[in-house]
Image 1 (cartoon, rainbow, N blue to C red):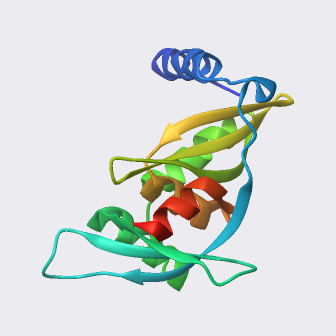
Image 2: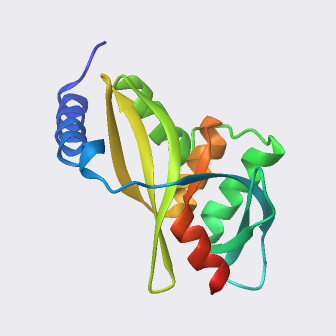
Length: 163
């Protein structure tokens, strides 16, 4: 693979960043991942906040997440199969992960704190599982783009339903 000077610098920074955020699975507390599916996208032309609804793939529990218009539109385009003439941000991230030898394994919504959800991109790279902190909206957009599973931590699902 041919890398220009600027591309090599970016590649090096990304490599350092990914290795810095690597977490050893044995150090993490036990998490019960619940498989979820994107059930609904609500796009409002009047409001800045859009809503997506995730639902258990093998159950009845579901919960909404408020996201931005860009992410909602990106997810909606993917779900509807509307092609983009040029790669969008989520395509770019997926392509970078693949070009660097990684495989986007799944996404996990892993925390709910002060009414804000947190998520992880889980990337398999050279036999190691890398977890990258991200917004749930970006995680779900990437999951839809890469056609990978969406999981929610059981504790988060319980808290979300209680709210």
